[in-house]
Length: 605
Ligand code: F6R
Image 1 (cartoon, protein in one colour):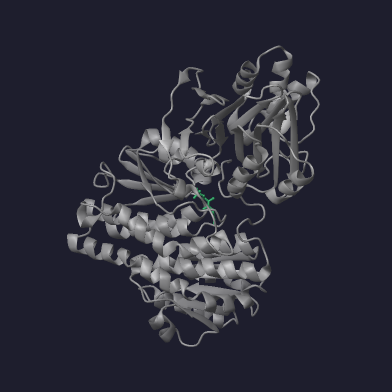
Image 2 (cartoon, rainbow, N blue to C red):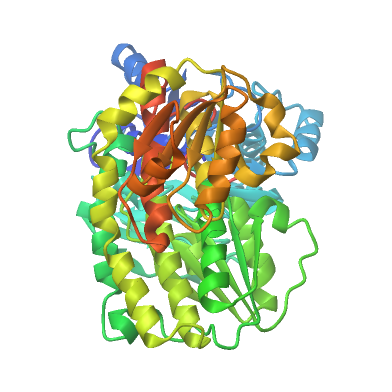
């Protein structure tokens, strides 16, 4: 949510910053901007909308300089406009900022009283006005930045650039991620390592509360108490950090297609000498756990919802599951034998991170299932299980979902063994089924042409309903979420049995109803609910396997999935849910990878 970048280079930095912003654009695309210092003078360019608008502007109005900062914005305070776009500037200071300054109103009032005149509606402008005020009082740039940071409440990552200072950027991290890149006679900063991947693979991650002084010679890092400190330098895998569409039309298409390979290699990375040939972190203790707490947001939350069925079924473990933004504001009852699992693709989702921090002192273990092992959520967990999905750039999460499911399934099976609920044979059999998932997912992907044809009808709908029972209920929720976010069609999902308690009133001949129903133990019941829809002329699309489609009788539309073991059905049925959304969006001409109003990494509450 907002991406920031900074470069102290040996050459012109504008093209480098633009390129880094391109890799951060998944974090927000309401506006973008760059500020540089050239011959001591601070200047900036800003444009509303996607980065391409800023690049176009800079063709006509280039920005020279060997030091600069850049920003791609997801609007929080103040709508998308040039005035609200970063970098913000006051006097001799420019700032880029990701996060929210919670006390900005009080600061703004205080500064306005002292004569500051504001030109934007943003919280960020208070930062730059404060820093400018301190400079005017005679503080040095470092002192002014430090004094400013001390006045700010909230969660943020930010970077300051000062007029007249060609070899200085000051940056700080509180709540939002920030990393430093080390080059040869150059230094960089970015919201993530991907942003810096074309410049360096040598990265230092700032810790919570850190601030840093960058010059071309290196970086000095200070902790929240202003003590100079050392943070490790890590070598990132440049190939992994590099992102392109590999010939696909969209990142989302590429990421859906990658799923079989990812699940295969992720499984390989968990293979070892542990029980059933699977290695999970030592110390993971499900035997003593009296309750599992699972917290996540969005798609990751639906993965947890599927996993709840597994933990109950395979391990007899009670699961309390909640959306992070709700969980934190309840008074959840936590106990010393609870194990808490946090699931997050980015590992930076503000609500999930805050829930983790809330829970950590009260439970036995905090486990995270993340795609970014260097993320804040990973670093603050007792144990980390990476999903190994590689960078996910399409805003709609696809491969991360199936990879999360795979890791959660491994955890649930391990819990089943630890608690004596699964025999070694049952455990081995379920693992074998999991190992077969990539092949079945590939078969589901092969139905793409058929799905494309089916979505011609869906693309004309105003509303769409998804139905499912058991593990297919979270899949229905996921299908509705995907459709909403990239095609902008209103979609709802219901547990099929809940339909007649209200939502059935919506059914008429114009409402497409997508029913997810593999031929499992709940099939008959789901089909009865589907009949209730058809009796009211609802336009049903039944997604099932060969046996299910045979037994369901005549339906207006159907889509055949491979016949799969129950444990991998959620991963396989995720594919039509994703492809339906993707092709409906293509028919409607929406922006698949960067849907309106969304950002990939939600680092504000
Ligand atoms: C939906 C989607 C979001 C994320 C949610 C959590 O396609 O991508 O709902 O799943 O914002 O993000 P992470 O997993 O990064 O915590």
